Length: 327
Image (cartoon, rainbow, N blue to C red; front, side, top):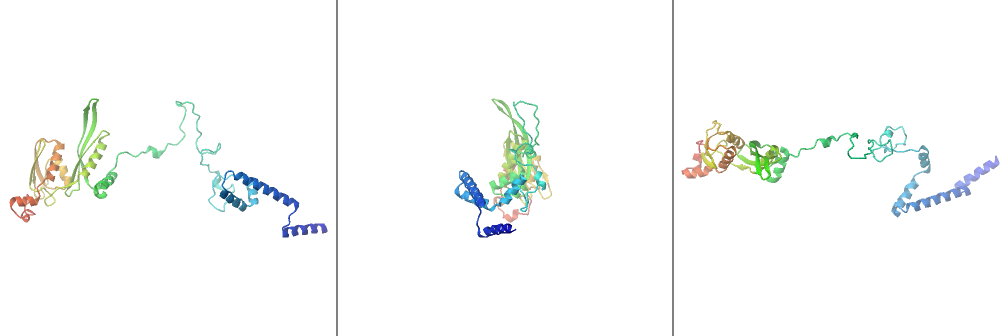
């Protein structure tokens, strides 16, 4: 009893005053030697600053924690979301697959890569799901919104104004270009646009890729060519118009309110875009649709203003404005 009590007293005394026995001192020397070798090995790969941070990190880890981890032989597959996670295998995320293709067998979610010996093997089956996003490729043709956005940057007009313009294709046809290599098919489109309030534009588009591409080009050029035209009471033209465009002879007259549009069908579409509500006219000689539309638009832009008409008749401006429908 006395020996036991004395040995216990000695042990407590050494612990209190920091005195180590020979066995504990030997163990400490071995650990210091291992640490020195470990740091010497790491010095080959890390800078002195990183070595210092490694020493600080290793000093903060308790040896008991390392022993527990070695005994359990844990393999953390998924990073824990909770900070208080105790690395237990009862977590449902433990069995989630590892999303890396270079893992060991039976751990990758990807299908096994077949051993291809020749490029013309037909017994290989595609095991991967097709990419839906790649299948639905966007059409190279521009939509109305993209056209309005591009024209807004080009012309300075409001994007909403361009989107709300009245658009009507007048001529759509397939033509053939005769060359030394033979006949090359091409597509032609003539489009008129307008805001129905005195602004009108005419555009042409040609393409070998199809009629839709030609229409997009025609729409683009028509908006670029928007031009204001003078109107009488915002509904008809000023007086009479006699105009010759190539083989087309145009005779256009203004009409009273409520008269309507009694004109050629192609001129009717142009009047709809320009906002002309009352008009009468006649076309002589050639009635080619392309020349009729081009000639009528050119005639509208070259009208004599009401001021010129008043000066030519020797009258005041008020005598011709809102008095007689045929200025």
